[in-house]
Length: 108
Image 1: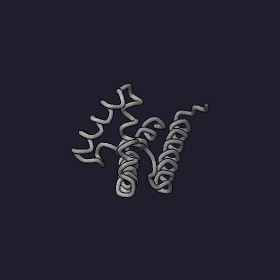
Image 2: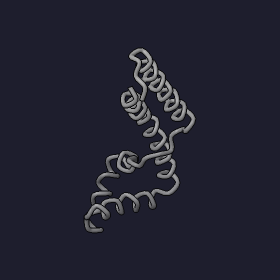
Image 3: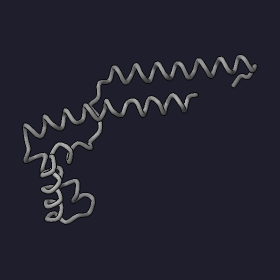
């Protein structure tokens, strides 16, 4: 039960994290497009491309939608909702585990 609750929390948290990340990236792209382009280029340099090839890749990706090319960072989702989700499902998993243990007379 604990593993199932953990998986549910993980999967259900992902869309909120991605939405928050896209909002933050859109704001950064609007405020400082040159810095965001340089960041995208540096990601590809960090992955082993030459600076020139990384620039070309970044240009082509940004040409198809700059927000889609730099929206892969994580974080920024509302903490309260995620905390409630973790606490609720964690408590449910513990309660169900305790109930099953009590029904079968098992103590760990």
